[in-house]
Length: 271
Length: 335
Image 1 (tube, chains in turn brown, green):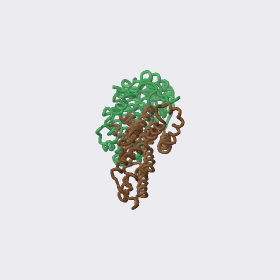
Image 2 (image 1 turned 45 degrees about the vertical axis):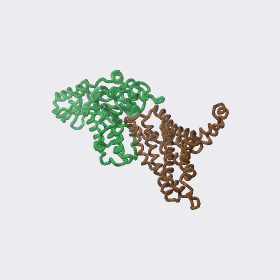
Image 3 (image 1 turned 30 degrees about the vertical axis):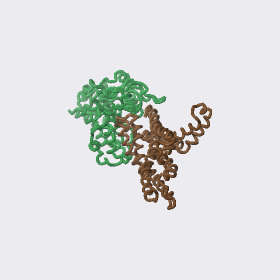
Image 4 (image 1 turned 60 degrees about the horizontal axis):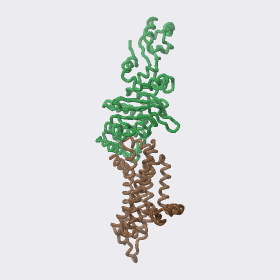
C-alpha cells in the first residue's frame, strides 16, 4: 500500500518532468524520421515493419536512446530527494526505506513505459501512411520490449541512486551505467575474458559459452535477442531458445538486483 | 503512557558528538518545547525519533515502540513537520496532502486540511511556486493528517511571519486540547512560553535544564527589577531602600524608581518607601526576559548549576512546581 502511494507520487512527478518529455519528443521525432527516410520505394514492396524495427530502429535508436531515458529518469530518484530534503517529508510518513526504493522503481518504470508507448505513436502513424506492409502486432510487441529495456535501466539507475549519498555521485554512476552497458560492454567483457584466459580454461565452460553468456548478460543485447526472436516469430523457440531464456533471466536479475543492493546501503545510512 | 522516551542516547558523527548520553521523557498529552541554540543537537535528536538517524548508543522509544524496529508503525501515528525539508516542486499542494492521506491510509479531506492551515486558495498551484512560509504550512497540513497521537515539529515557525507564527501556535494548542502530545523544537523563546507545559534546554548535545518556563525562571532569576511609581521619592527615601537587605541598586527614572532586588525583598522595598513618607501610586515587577533566561542556560553558569539535577532526574519538576511558580510569576499589583 505504502509502496503504491510512493509509486503513484513518483509517476505523477516524473510525467511532469520537462527533461523526460523533451527526450521522448526527440526519440519520437528521430524514430519517425528514420521510418520516413528508409521507407520502401515502389520497387521493394516487400519491405516490412519487422525489418525496419530489427535492422534500423532497433540497433540505432532503441538500444541507445531508451537506456539513456531510463538512466535520466532513474539516476536522481533517491539521491535527488536526499539532497533537496524532500526525502525528509517522504520518510516522515509511514514508509519504510524499502518502500521508497521499490516504489520509485515501479513509479518511474511505469512513467518510462508510458513515455516509450507515447514515443512510438508518431512513428506508427508515419508507417501507416507510408507504403509499407504495416504489421501492427509486431510494432506493438516491439514497443513492449523497448519499454522493458527502459524499465531495466530505470531499475539499475534507481539502485545506484539509492546507494549514492550525493547527486554528483549518482550522476557519475548514471553516466557509468550508460557507458558500460550501451557503449563498452563488448570491449570490456572481451578484455576480461582475454585477461582471465587461464582461469577460464579451468572452468567447465568454453570461452565461447562464456562470451555468449556475457553477451546476453547485458540488458541491451538481451532485449535485442528477445525482440529479434519475437520479430522472427521464434520467441522462446527455435535454435536460440536457450539463449533467449538466459537473456530473459538476466533481465529479471538486472531489474531486481541493483535496487536490492542499493537498498542495503540506503537502509544503513544516516539521512 | 509515555510518548517519547530516550535512554542514554548518544550520537557521534565521526569525531563529533552531536548528542551525549541524553535521557528525555515526554508524557502523553504534554506540550514539550525543545530548546537550544543552533548546533546544540536538536535536529539530530528529532531525526533519531523518526529513525532517519540511528543512535550510536542508547534506545529511542516513541509511543511505546522502539523506532529502530517499529519505525513505520510509529510514524503512522505521528505527524511530523521536519526542518530543512523541501517540497515536490512539480506537484500541487493538494497532491502533497493527498499523498500524505494515502500514505497514512487515512480518510481526511485534503481541502479541509489545506483550509485549516490557510492554503485553500493555493491548493492547485505547484508547490514549487510556494513561498517558504507556504511550504511550512503545507508540511503542517501533511503532519495533521489522521489526527496523530504525537506531533513532532522541528522549528515550526521558521519562515512564518508573526501572524503565521500565531496561527501555528493556535493549531498546536488545538491539537494539544484534542489530546495529542506535541514535541517541538525552537530557538525562539516567546513561542515556547505561550504554549509549552514543559521545556528542555539542550546545549552541546546535553540536556542542561528541564522544567516549566516559570520553574526555569525561578532557578535562574534570584533577581528581579521592580518599577515603582513614586513621584515624591527623595534622596533620603532612596537611601533607605538601598540600605535594605537584598537590594542591589536603586535608580530614578522620571517619576519612577527602578529597584533591582531579590524577588522576596519586594514587600520590604514598598514598606521602606511608605515609612519614609513616600506615596507609592503603583508598582510592578519586570521579570528576567526569556532571552536572558535562555542565555543564562546556554552560555552562563546556570547551565552548569542545573545540569546535574536535570541529568539525574529527567522527569522532575513537571507537576509539583507549577502551583508555586504561578504565584511568583508576573506579579502586578495596583494600589
